[in-house]
Length: 325
Image 1 (cartoon, rainbow, N blue to C red):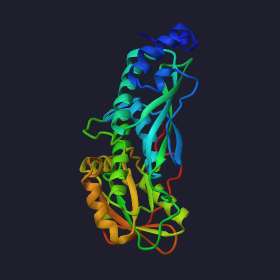
Image 2: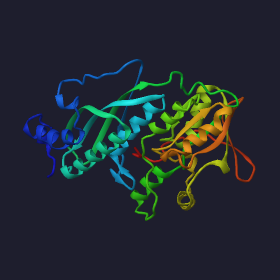
Image 3: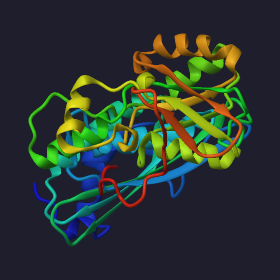
Image 4: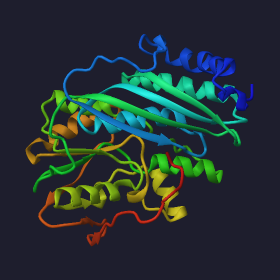
């Protein structure tokens, strides 16, 4: 069934779209009440965030726009030391979209939300003129489990951990667009379980950040600027799969600036670094975690290269790749 403008009228067809696809997949006791707003049970301080997803293509190896919309918002909450609890989902659907495609996206969101332990408790649907694309906005709230985790809190001698291989989401999207056959899949994943493991084991996390647009280089520059410190990393320590390395060599890409949707950095005190690394590696999503550098006195980000040289690592300028999330 093709979606036309009448499905955004607010009438019977809108109701059918919501009931047949969204309520069926997002079924829960809060959403099913269909009130004007969700009434939620949250205690203490909360984190709140929102993000919009316009990725092209909508389906790619390792996920689709729906999985991205759940994981992106869940991960933003997690990086603040918050347990993701509730999400809202707003859909802007272009006329011509296939209802089976929307159903597939919604089902993926259901699976991703269940894995992340969140409920989709409110939403909105608009149908506009267009060529069959789907855009999603997700907002989320989470309960703060640990106060004080901030990009401004890094201190000299702190150690930087990266939860896994760089560049996989970026390479997967680019491969789909360019028609390049390979086995590279997006790393799109909810990261709260890593955060939970670290907190349960009393790791004193100074700062966390998911490595998305702009890549690791941009994230580390944000850490340097916000904490007024120097970040020093070691190129030989950066985890990158052989397939992504080969992909980068062919296309002239730098993994430092490539986006991920299932990787994070954590900055911890030096005496807890090895324990934190072990905890990350014991998590399904942190198997390739590595200690990649440390915080020192000064400004900017520098990297010791595989040849022993030293290179300043700047923030990404321009747009590395449009519509990657």
